[in-house]
Image 1 (tube, rainbow, N blue to C red):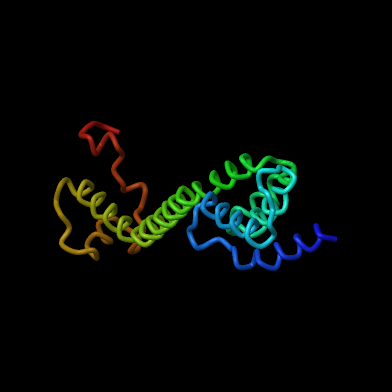
Image 2 (spheres, one colour):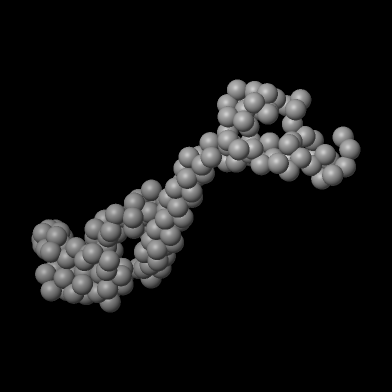
Length: 173
């Protein structure tokens, strides 16, 4: 009966002992231990009494830490407190790496979008380049003359009139 009362008291007051934003798991454990001693009068020197605050530590940790324990480490309730701390700190320290990877992914996505938008410009630049080489170094005066010279519609080049790579380098085809 006394044990149940301690457990209920601990649970009732554990809501007051939630982790602060960006709080290190070790600092959270200190607050939680103080609450266990103050409200439940637990002797945390006894390993048997550490199960209640350990369970609260896992269940009320930040979402990423709590999810890691519940989804990846199914036997977390059998682990020692030191092992729980080690795992919680590992997850806590991985947050920055995850944020950096997400930032890199977003930057790569933006770069791909920029490249996709520039494709029509590049295509036009390549057409001008090909026309210059096709006209023996004479720069066309307009894109319409480029179209006439290339013998195609705007945006398309007749492959038969395109110089080959050896021709562009000065050799024969």
